[in-house]
Image (cartoon, rainbow, N blue to C red; front, top):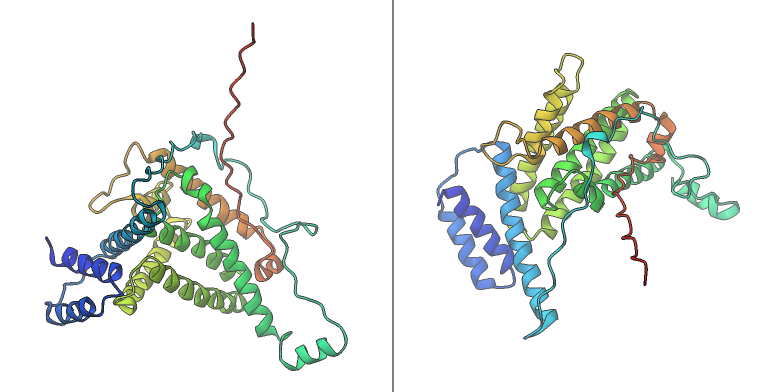
Length: 318
């Protein structure tokens, strides 16, 4: 067992038994006496974190499920196969603006108060430019997480719902939004910084929720490196000088590939190519989305609809 895998196992054990003070002290002493680990590639760090978090989450889920079912209860049936998706025919339509129509129930708007209430809120800087920007940034980030956390995105692109894939999709959609905001100059960059701060807080909560509370600052630094590394790769893959397959290869390495797998797997190729088409189309659609919609969060990523199974025809009764 490698030193890194051993460290990941110790982190999983600490997350699963965080209520035990004695084990926590033993783990702290073990970490203090452990030799320094050599620097590892970013993808390796992400996968090691994903495995340790998944182990902790699986242990917690197994414990809670066994407790809720009680002794002698039957285990739940396993999930059925994913519905069939025709990936080769998806995301080929002409790009269009993602701005929500004026009558959309999903639109967000600042509350309009009158009289003394508006006067007091004005004194409290509720209607200041910065306050409006912060509210808009929260709405924009809600649009991102709504797309990333939706079950459809995992079914359509044939992805496993795990920390690694969720984090990778989160980075991908953050890049799409930040890339669009750069087109608005300094105002867009400043607004993007607000969104990035919200993203950082959310990732920290997701890491803790995954069961990894030990060495949290270290993991956050490594995930930050992965974030910026992926951003640079996506920018290069979608630049005018890039080749047609560059984006496919980057998405394969960042989201799908396991350690040591460089070439796109033939079985996963349709899903990877579909995600690349989706990414390229969303980038164009966001460029067509007006500034007001981007700064207020009144836009929505393309809805990923799963095919509805046709009902089985009834046999005629005799």
